[in-house]
Image (cartoon, rainbow, N blue to C red):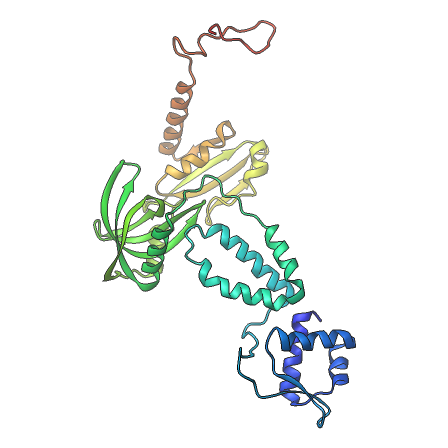
Length: 347
């Protein structure tokens, strides 16, 4: 029996029997005299349990609590491994909580868990140090904006802001009714009803400026409807008209891609020559195209033809960017017959 389970069991036994002899507790818990003394001291000193030894009754009982912190075991009880797992999750939360919205509210629980671990809290602190989340290409959100969005979401109020639409390079005033906060690929997004366009849209928190909380209630959209409209296609900007992309990866790329989840509804199969075929639904193809392009020559878009043509055009444009032009350093390089690295003709 681990230490936390013993603490819970001691509390339960004393409450049930009113008075319990030391030897009976020791036999019930199957522990040594020294271990039981430490557990009783932990209950008294760390959890403020009003446990006293009643000489007349010949055992331990709960007395009337004195002034000061009240004794109460948590409604949810965790063993030491579960506590360590929760503390590790807190480490992950700290790395994800770029705006500081959740951290202050979770911290009291973390302090309580640290206290429950007692002598093993050092191990928990060490474990948290050994869990690290490395965010690549993160887009930080201004803490004050993150907090305002969070408050609006919880309190069901509207937001007003200037929003920078990168695709059109414009800033426009928007009034939003927040529906759902989403963390996706190291960036934060808000699924919201846009009162300017009267439709559900996805907004990047890092593109929000001059955010203001309004004293007007949000327009409510059932979450099932939010998921139906925004949750069908590929990526964060999903679109409504869903198509299916058919991708074929080389045998080499298949070793990695077959272990990846590109979409919850994806379909896949291994081909006879070792290649891997992946089918994923998409609406707006922008994000899917970027994921395909990162595999370069290791993937072929089989269908639909419109997506295949778009990728072919983008690859051709990328190739043109690498073609040498007159006067460029690449055009001025002279090939070495010996196969060594060429030297530029300019100094």
